Length: 267
Image (tube, rainbow, N blue to C red; front, side, top):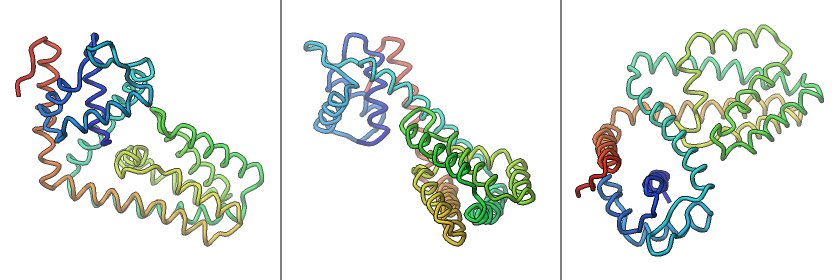
């Protein structure tokens, strides 16, 4: 099931107080030009039923359950963030893109060194705080916050454990120079499509093993994944695929507007 398909189906069911059937949902998805079929819609609805997000209402179709409304609220939040990320990437000029990549490369060097030093100097108490931060990040991965606060906290804990105030200050100074870089890093999972949690686990394992070289490489690889993904998104922002998303977004808004006004959406 694609995220767009799940989101659009749940969003449409949410505005249908008396329930909506699979046929009407299929027409709605076709209006949005989301290529799908009756069989696919039926399969998605059964999965949503199984997850407790939707429920049948007699022969009228389906409505959202309380769990479904809560899940849709989280999806709305993610959709707004995804739209922000798309807009930020589209509006970033090539010269600014190059500057962002330079900042990230500098941060990669500094934070990789901090991770190596943390492997040498981290105290048992500092290691416990890192473990706690990652445990909380893992628990929040499926929440609206997606564990991003705990992910940022982990980086801060590693920097403190390095016990080098000059490198830590240098890192903080570089982050403070460019708010766009910080914002993109904070929403990294939306931009590159994967959580930072597995990378953090590898960094922590190397620090726990008191292996500075492995800690350096693990943090370096963590940044490399984001830098590589961001470069891809910059290229994508100039491609035909991304440009084609704008008309679809406009059609989506128009369809929803007609739905709210009570007029049926034309095909």
